[in-house]
Length: 349
Ligand code: F6P
Image (cartoon, rainbow, N blue to C red; front, side):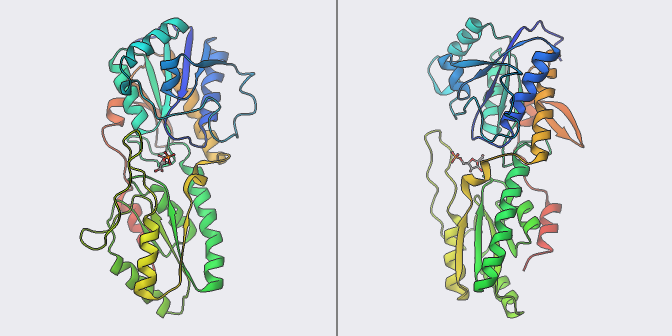
């Protein structure tokens, strides 16, 4: 806590991949900042890029009407950071001075929050809000957007059951989540998956095929295998192509389900089909839980700024919102717990 600062103007930005609930967070920040504190609020365009280019718009309670259920982000997002650009931090500082910005709310996932932490170390007063459908940010039990992604994946799995049963097929469905299996595990449990493969536990394709064969021998002729995009085979068990790297140096995951499905069909003889849910999981309106959670995050972020609690991140813990240090939150990504995976396993095959 660094004491209550004199704030008159703030800015909010959304950075990284979009996520259902971003607009609800923005609305929460604006509501609290304008109505309770009387601050002026700017919405920075396209994440940190807008701070480099001085591109932003004024946000008001009136102007934010109707955005609560809307997917995406009304101010745009990007994966740019000031540290990717020569003199980037100087540009950010110039923009903040020119606009009279006293503090920022940075809404982002692990990468963007790491950038926010660096910026805070460079003297920028800011507070972070954890965003991602992957739910992998440390020290918070729930990032907003996750619930929506799980719901979309569960709906898809429900639909795959009926077509799988009609054709006696194995359906392999790939979900997002980067290097963690939160979406896969929760959607697999909720959708009654036959098996769920997650990055936390490298899989052996021989075991997968054996489990499916055993199940089908019991008279079940349809199966759903949920595969997290970051799932990987145990070393030496199966060759998979290296994922390409995007312009920001991130691995572009996606496609593992094709390898898994081909192996299942070849080894078991069961007709197998693939569904990649992809960005559908990030699009559209947030669930009611995510709308409420996001609104709560937004209000708490404005409060943290008012208290001068810079360098902190809002975190959801044990049913409450708390403040943790950004440094601690980004120290480690959050994996699925062994307990949850054990529960999921008790429904396998
Ligand atoms: O982090 C969110 C996420 O949707 C991941 O689950 C996925 O791997 C990645 O973003 C996809 O990123 P992009 O939008 O760049 O394809």
